[in-house]
Amino acid sequence: METEAIAASTVQKAASVVGPVILLGPPGAGKGTQAIRISQRFGIPQISTGDLLRDNISRGTELGKQAQEIMERGELVPDELVCRMVASRLTQADCARGFILDGFPRTVKQAEWLDKHLAENHCFENEDGSRRLVVIRFTVEYNQLLQRLTGRRTCPTCGRIYNIHTQPPRLDGICDIDGSVLVTRKDDREDVIIARLKTYESQTLPLVSYYAQRNRLKDIDGAGDVDRVTVEAFKAIEDGNSL
Ligand code: AP5
Image (tube, rainbow, N blue to C red; front, side, top):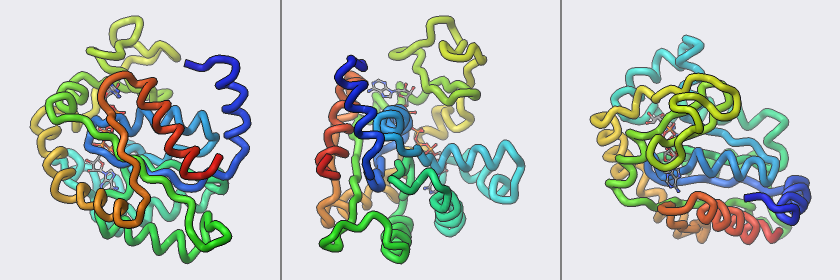
């Protein structure tokens, strides 16, 4: 999708302070797919709490041991554990110009924790005391989410996300970029997907009114063309940061 003009403006945007971008939306809405593109465009890191937890599981850490069964049931890992993990990630130098939170916050408690954390650390305050914070919610209807998640395949090496129905790799089961064998996530089984969607409705959906009341929420139709969704997400971030 990158023409010369877009590539030139990407270099320019990648030098600006962007502030935090929160990606909200149900499992399969395209948060991870869009986070990778936003990260490249603005030069800010993608912080996926799901990826951080899966990394802890594969390394066998104490956090990973506590999270594994919860994630396999499609429930949420306790707020304190996730907030501590995010706090530690935000201390890293690459977050100084902004960051993308993909899958966090996921409960009102996590959102309140984040507000407090950013305020206490005076992060990304404008001169008038307001904060740079853009919250994007991707909406996609239920049956499409089910189809997307059962068809998702991921590269364990570079993290690229494919879909056997809509974005297949050139060679069946093999990553186009590095040739790794693609994997299916353990929680992409139909019964677990249904549990994850229920968890989203009961625990994460209240964040929509939380951020709407604070005038932060930008809804984007997450169905249809991936590039169109990306263009709308870039615009929401640029508008929210006066770029
Ligand atoms: P996490 O890893 O965050 O999973 P999720 O929120 O369920 O979201 P997904 O990664 O499944 O979907 P996505 O929106 O990123 O979609 P994607 O871009 O991959 O969390 C996993 C678990 O960790 C949770 O269940 C919980 O237990 C725990 N956890 C994580 N964060 C937590 C927190 N804050 N608190 C407590 N617990 C936490 O796309 C999906 C598919 O659709 C792909 O195949 C893709 O190619 C395709 N696709 C994308 N866009 C389009 C499009 N426009 N058109 C067609 N296909 C598309």
